[in-house]
Amino acid sequence: MDKAGGYFQKAYDLSGNVSRNERFAIRFHYDALTLGDLEAGAKNIEEWTETYPADEWGRMELVDIETQIGNFARAIEAGEYELKYGPTSPEDNYQALARAYLRSNRFADAKRTIAAAQATGKDGSSRFGKMRMRMFRS
Image 1 (cartoon, helix red, strand yellow):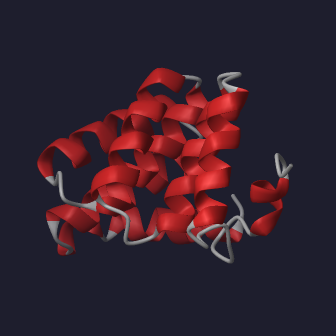
Image 2: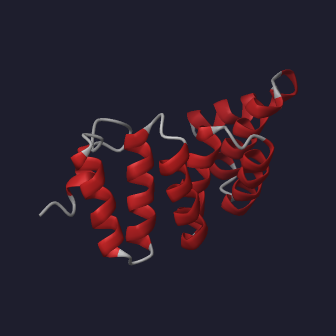
């Protein structure tokens, strides 16, 4: 187990002492990243987003995990919803949605999403960096 896996294991072991919302985040990371069980991670995120529908972090994790699993329709649905209703991290929202479109071979939608991010100045400096947004620049 790598160092991060050890930390996730420790967080999981101590998760009885945190809020329910935090427990969802810990369980997701433990299942998906420590155990490599993406299906269990996705199931946890589904429950997380149903329990805490206003939690933007849970919904963004849903977009990412569904894209990784190959459930592109679900990832796109969650990404479009998040971009419309909860964009406190719009760079991440645009990038996650564009990635879901790309992985589902919806290149025109990916290009449109990237163009919208660039038009609003949200093509930027967050976790994935500008490189992904430049992929379809005209």
